[in-house]
Length: 282
Image (tube, rainbow, N blue to C red):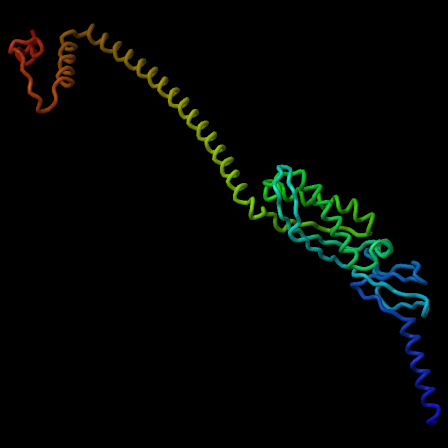
């Protein structure tokens, strides 16, 4: 019995090795490709399928390479970009991507780290193409959403074919000017805003002048019409009662000519005060 114990242990160990080389598990979050002598055989649990579980392979002949089937992240920091207005920017971006063709990914990148490195190269080129045609103001704020969509479309057109991946989303996290040029660009932006404000102010003043001139013309017209109507009424009143009209005109003259407390020296028989001298005003 003691002599057979090593043999039994050896058989058990060999059986365990054989089992480990024959069975493998594909988790829900993974996808796998089976290789036979380094050549592709099959893929398991790729995106769009539901094939997790326990699988068999030929021992010592087949090998299994697993990749994450979920979305993965790639961060690019401080990428130098020259905008169309020749301003240099430092851009931080985030790329969300997924392996959709494990066979092609294995052939072109081999590992997830290798794929991320190649995707980073593709992203840098796509960012230069998309952002190089936009001004610094558009990259910083004006067209950022549109530019991110352009980068995503560019990557899916190139990286999908080359790497067997799908770019899910691209986000420009930050786009800023280098310290050496930031103040100069901000000063130019302030000057441009001042010019726009001055133009709008001048347009407003011109519109105000037109409105005031139009209002004055309308006021003069209405005043003229009022004076004409007043003259017509007075003319009619003069025709009906000339004595009353003369009296009213004298009272109006007193009202305009004499302020309270104003001394005035005139001849007692002046025609100006005839209504104060004689009751009839004659």
